[in-house]
Image (cartoon, rainbow, N blue to C red; front, side, top):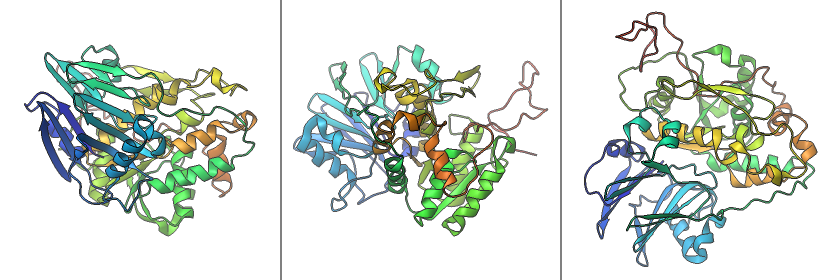
Length: 452
């Protein structure tokens, strides 16, 4: 992905060197009336385009990708500019992608995101200085990805998704309450055909040459792999097997066999091969997954099945215990409804549609990916796919948990996993009996460790 910083502080700050990791292709900084605008580019589509781009006295930045951009234009930022100049604040209705789009117009800085805010933006004020950045300018957050710290902090604010946010350089931040994208909640489609079609579109628009799929034995990433193979798209596969008891090997083997020659490279992570990396945040396995993606495959784009639980079922009928970072107690993720109601407006937006586990996992995986110069593409955070699912008849939704993905696998004779998954990248290296903390002598997981 790309990264950015907008501030009236001319000095370097803590996160500058980490922002550069997310945009390794080209860095550019300009100064406009005492405001410093920095953009770090990870070039994937079109011509190499330094940002910000000036048009009619306004300055524009794009973080992320537009999947429906006009390829006759030099790059996709120009597509966003054309749509903004044509439709004004309603231009996001005409964009399909995972993006943050920034418009600097005189003293105003305007921020527009995709419906889920897949690309991060943090606001921080320190005396007379303001900062808008891809990563929060605070060591406590960056090193541990502590969303609870953000909740308690009076210093750092993550801008909300699906809203226009406007900041006046004199120091006032205003969040527009109206959603940029509005959803049709009618449950009037008596089949999964539209969901099938929009799912395949969501996968194919995110495919990129030499991309890497993070594949587990679960429903979500397995469905993505099958779709890529059906459409004869080649891709790399990386699986996480440091704790094989968390994976359904039969399902995984069936998916690998089905995809066959369309998997150009396949690697199972079973141990760490390098512990010298010092890139925060220091969750060793999650970092190792990204490091090996770069080292083994030289990929620029990662595809994940992230978002299926949150968009398609909100964790209803199942609870999931997760460990939320360094030094924190386990948390239980659960739903706020058991069955889909006849009137969907009574639950929408449900807990994890925008917030909850959606927000936590998007920021978690996005942060790690950008620190390794990777663009993360999330299949199930797709506007058309989410809308198609919202419109499915309530009786179909209630047939079974994740009915769409289960049917997708059954049609291809792939077995359904017999036990819940832990979530790709959220396992940990097994605790080694000799790990101790220096002062207490108690067993503890170090920041980095390799098998001996």
